[in-house]
Length: 269
Image (cartoon, rainbow, N blue to C red):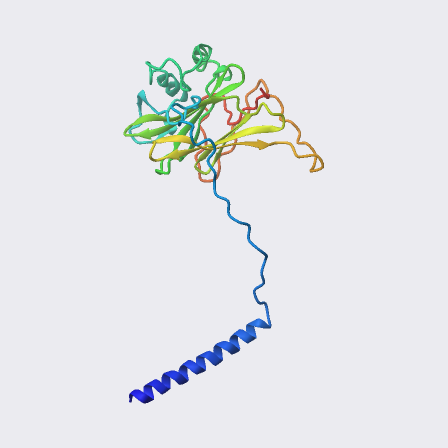
């Protein structure tokens, strides 16, 4: 039995070899693989000036990672849609009384203008809120814009947490526009370089429990010579506030408790 078994294996192997050769020959007559040339050599990163000591402090305060529990605001059902935006801003002024500076602080002029909100909504610095689930926990966060002197805008994001409210983002800048894209909040700001602007995407970070600037880049806003016409510059903001943009499908409509606006135009600095 063993000699027959061995002979059978040799015969099967020979048949497989002949069949494979025939298949290879057939493939060679059609769309065979062709070389695209030599691949470029990979160049790894080279560290420059390795003898320099590491930085001991951040270069500037960008507001990243700053969170604060808002005192006096309760959200027992985790729904921020019913909160008064002006009351939230006022309560946030007392969130960190020991902090003399920072992105969460508001100028004295802006604080005084909060008194105008009940009787003169057009003069209220707090813009209409927008809502979006930015943390991925299934509940909407509240996004607030606060107009500051010098055409600046302060953007705050508040998250319902443990029956209360936590500020998970606070930053201020001369803003061209503010956008919600998925779970990112995108801010565009003017650049000192003509024809460019800054684009910063803020995203929720589970470890820090805050919104962080995960992407920060400078972009060209005008085409190179011969690549098309220069886009028409954005008009200056009108004295009358614009209506808020329509929310994306599946999101809740904003409650117009303040002068509505989601994007603020600003002149280049």
